[in-house]
Length: 239
Ligand code: C5P
Image (tube, rainbow, N blue to C red; front, side):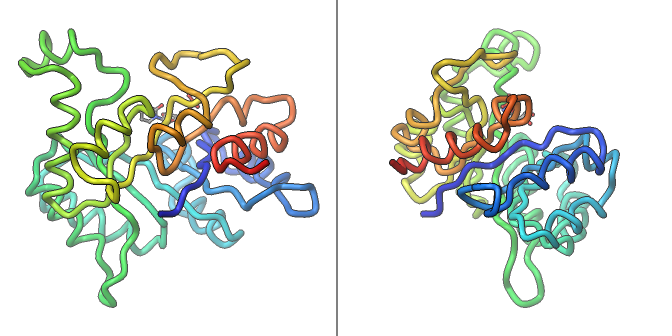
C-alpha cells in the first residue's frame, strides 16, 4: 500500500502557499514532490483555482473539506470535487452510511475512476467526556471510532482520518487494507502545539499509519525542506 507524508498547507492565501511549495524541488534536494493537503481555510480563501494550480505543478492533493449534509447534497458536491482531479477527499462518518454511499457515487467519474474517499470518525478535538455529555453518545470514544470506521468500510470508502495512536485499532477492526490518514505527528524533539494525541513519524509507521498529515513541524520550521525530508526519512524508514 502507498505510504506518504502529506503536508498540511494551512496558509490563508494562494501566494503564500505557492511560495512555500516553490522550495520543494529535486534541485533543492527535496526527496519527493510533496503530497499536499488543502483545507477549508485555503479553499475558501483561494477557491478551486488553487487546487488546479497545485495539481498542475505535479503534486498529489488531499482536499480536506469534511463534508456533512444530506446524501443528495453531498453526492452533488462530491461530483464537483471529483472534477477538480484531486487524489483524496473526505467527509464526516457521522453523516451515516447512506450519505457515505451517495458521496462515493458522486465522486465516481463516468470512466469509473475516482479520488480516494476517507471519513473523519471523531475529531481529535472531541473528548470522550464532551461526546457523551454534549452529543449524548453513550459509548467509549474508541468504540465510536471503530464503529464509524466500520460504517465507512460498509459504505465502500477507502479509509479514515484518525489519530496515529488509533491506526492499529482501526486496522485490527476493519482490515489492514483500510487506509489510515493520521494528523497529530511531531518530531521527538519538538513541541506539541495544540495537538494532544501525538506521536513521531517513525512510531506512526510502526502503528500502521498509511499517510501522515504534518503541518506546523514543516510549515513553521526554520528550514521547511529539511523538516520535510526528515519526516519522509523517518516515516518511510529511509536511512
Ligand atoms: O500543524 P499540524 O501538524 O498540527 O496540522 C495538522 C493538520 O491536520 C491540520 O490541518 C489539522 O486541521 C488537521 N487535522 C487534525 N486532526 C484531525 C483532523 C485534521 O489535526 N482530527
